[in-house]
Image 1 (cartoon, rainbow, N blue to C red):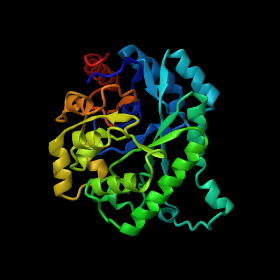
Image 2 (tube, rainbow, N blue to C red):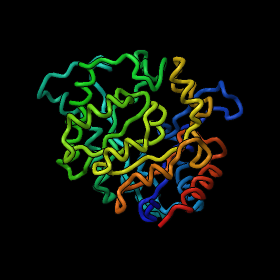
Image 3 (cartoon, rainbow, N blue to C red):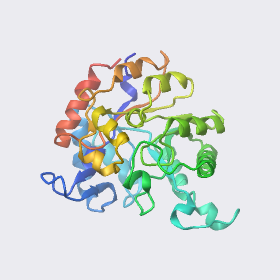
Image 4 (tube, rainbow, N blue to C red):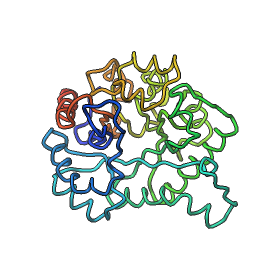
Length: 317
């Protein structure tokens, strides 16, 4: 199967997830989407994405800008927008106890409502929905041992499923359909956790918006997973991996950042995943979004975008 030309986009993450000193692998990891100074660089980045060949970019409105400001910036770059990403945290992971029906409990979902507002403003009717990726002291799946379902607890999984379902309800109320997004480092990263969530929440409320690379990182066959849930797949994050790094991270307890620094993420076509087989597992008339994602570029971000487009362009229809 090929990729629909009007349903392919790039996530600009390779400009945001960087080392403080690219020449020093021990330097701090930066997440520039959260840095107010990134607003000044954002227009140039969007133009670079368009110049690389992509006609659409994943929606990522900065906390420091209005929807109108972001709309002007995207339009100036000549880009369309693809669905964005919403996440929901467990209150107890933040030391919070929420009384049922309280104002505090209602407000806990404000971030999800904001994502619905952004989606509606830009005419998008789906969104990737994942549990929070936490970096706190208790975040064992990020700080200690990735991709193996560390510190699994059936009761907590039930709580996560409840929060995902309630978030999907909030989104549906606003006319946006949620797709479950698996992500290493969250409480939904293993095959059991993914399947349990999809089994517990009706398909008309929660679709599937898989991250192909994160499936493979957890040792899951992404082709089999896409084929199994083909009638439920809304959109995809498509990324390539060095599977030797992924396997080592599962065999020996490895923090998320250590695996990232070891070069697990690669541009499409440069890694070990059979991404063409993943696309072939989708229904013939599938019309969802395919978002190319390189969580940490293996080269300069502009070159990374160009390589990503070269791979993509060969598969357009």
